[in-house]
Amino acid sequence: MRLALPLHCYDEAGVVLPPTWWYGLLAFGARDVLLILMISALPGEADTLFKLIFVHSHWLVWQVLAAMPFAIAFLLTSFRSVLWKKQRLTWRKWLKPLCWLGIGCQVTVMGMLTVKMGGQFNVYYGSIFIALCVMAYMLVKSQYLQIMIEDWRRLPEAVTPSSSK
Image (cartoon, rainbow, N blue to C red; front, side, top):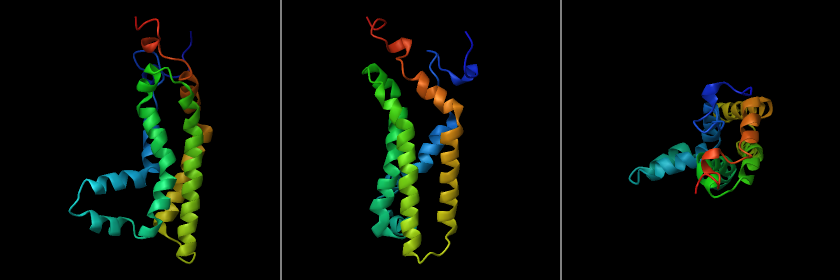
């Protein structure tokens, strides 16, 4: 039997592990949610940090909503063993569509913010747009991701009902 990926890409049960860049991609996409969680951990400086990081605070809801698909994909990927133990398999089909939805939402929010600023170029939003383009390219071209999602369609041997007796 020939493996589709190198041996270091599999765990002990023979299941394909998510690539390291996958977590980076999801964390970048969910950056607004992660920033809010980190800022909320510092109650004394929370107001100052919110005003510093989220300059357009009335757009914060849109930014968080645009980041939610990435946060959901991050949670699904992180808790895959729990989902497998509950015999859930269809969640894996939602990983790529959630990422595409997140990319589309974030580009839309960035467009709305750019229009609000009068169409002026902003290095921050420009770099986010380039990063989102790279993310879209990786979603389209990554065979590793396709193999991983295809491999996750079956339960690992460690959590199948016959082995849990």
